[in-house]
Length: 247
Image (spheres, rainbow, N blue to C red):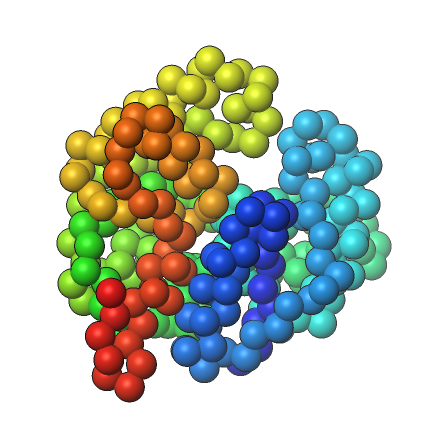
């Protein structure tokens, strides 16, 4: 099986190690991974701000970049939701509509790809830490991803999973929402960070680095010693090679 990594703008600029972790996990699972160098922003920031023509231009370039990909795997459920739910509507007819629908059908969020495409039932991973998880809005509500990542964490030896109260609540980031509604956003992430601390977890895991960046920043300002990691980082860091122990 072949997969192409969609690293996203935020991943490319600020969190390249997350993309590397995705590649590590997928290759350990026998997937051949490539990185289309022509990939661009998926167009979501422009689309959410009402600049539909600009979003369409980004989307067309994005479709071109992943035209030959068997599967596209992303570190961001938010970006996957853009491709799946909005690309076909950006191109209502013709060849581009068909291309948009085809790409939407083969684009996956990382945990979704492991669960729904690869059918992962066990993992040779050890990660000794108390862990809680934030469920990002787009990933949970638009992609329907909820139990899958928790099931994957349950396959990790040594991991002490701590359920997060009000895990379904938005962290307050929401892209431009955090800028336009700064006071409301700050209160939302303050409540989220408080719930994270109450779990006593050492690590907060998520599926979208924008949310983790937002929550992690608030946790640091509260003086909390809670690491924030993408699910792929936990799996890659704890992967056992030749029977060796992970973290």
